[in-house]
Picture 1 (tube, rainbow, N blue to C red):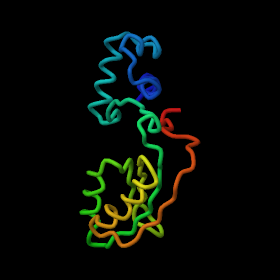
Picture 2 (tube, one colour):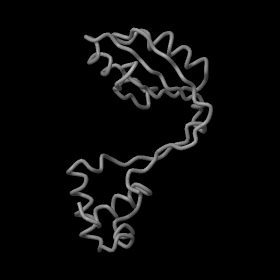
Picture 3 (cartoon, rainbow, N blue to C red):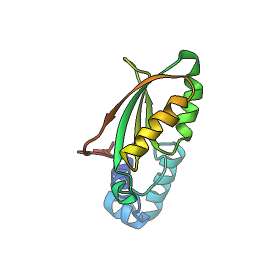
Length: 147
């Protein structure tokens, strides 16, 4: 990866809707070489996709929680599959420490979160215990990798 690839990544991370002409102007490349470099970055898996940045509150999703989960040793794979398929789980990370996973969950309300924890999370494969922390407000999200 050279300085042009890094510049392309920096610009696309800030605005994934840039045209190849605009991206080329911002990175010092013409449209065709810029397009070829983006294709190569996509093929290599460096660029995993493009998406819109949505405002959860405007979509009625105002309750954000972080849930630390401990899972029975022999049930990790089944737990991971169940979590990956659940639409309310924004992210889930395998961790080292007191618990096995850290999940980020978003819900429309505290009542919906309570229902998720009591009716859904407890029933996921292998869940032994969990601890929930509520986010009061978000200070920073969607940090950039290319700084």
